[in-house]
Every structure is written in C-alpha cells, then in structure tokens.
Image 1: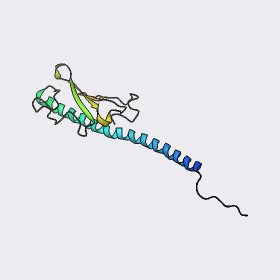
Image 2: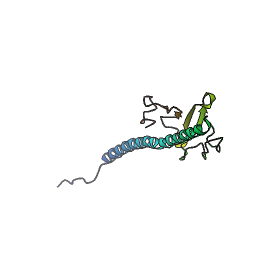
Image 3: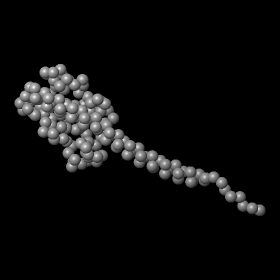
Length: 145
C-alpha cells in the first residue's frame, strides 16, 4: 500500500496564524490611536494661536486684553464660538493684573480627552505648556510641535 500525503492545514497551524494576526492588529490599532491624538491636537494648537493673534490685535487697539472670545468688537474678539473648528478643544482666556497679560487654555473634549498632553496653554509672552521636557505629557510626541 502507498501512504497518502496530507493536504491543507491542521487546526493548530490555523490557530497560530489567527493569533499572530490578532497581535499585529492590536499593535496597529494602538499606534493608529496615538497618531489620531497627534493629528487632532493641531486643531487646538491652531485655535489657540488664532486667539492669541486676535488678542494682540485687540491690545493694539485698546491697550488691554480681553477675556471675551465670542463677543463682538469692541467688547470681544468676535469668534463664532469658544470651541475649536473641529470641536476637539474648548478655549478660555484668563487675564492677569490690569488686563495686561493673558493665558489661553485649550481643554480637550470629544475624542481628544484621552490625549496624554491634556490641556494646552499659551500666554502673551508665547510660553506654551506642556513644555517639550514634560513627561508623560509628551509621551506621544511633542505637544507643541
């Protein structure tokens, strides 16, 4: 009699392939989520920079800064909303003594709340936090790149 050669895969070989695919998919999803946080962070960065530019224009006209982001000029900066264009950050302005300094804070919301950077801040001197050396905030890339 002649021996027949087996054709196809055994159940064990098939299960090993499925486990390997599962591990690779889990790693890819984790890295994709981190990339999404970095991409959405630019929405908040751009919004804070736009508010800072508007604050400087306001200061040029009135010699003080304003905390009113959505109010019409001359009382405010005339933005449509205190929420960034893509709705990932909400901004608030805190004024210093005599309304001659400000700090803008962008608080993450929606799908951005789990970002390691957390809230972004920018002041009238151009100081940005979290700074590049702060960890674990910058564990997913520089928060202000």
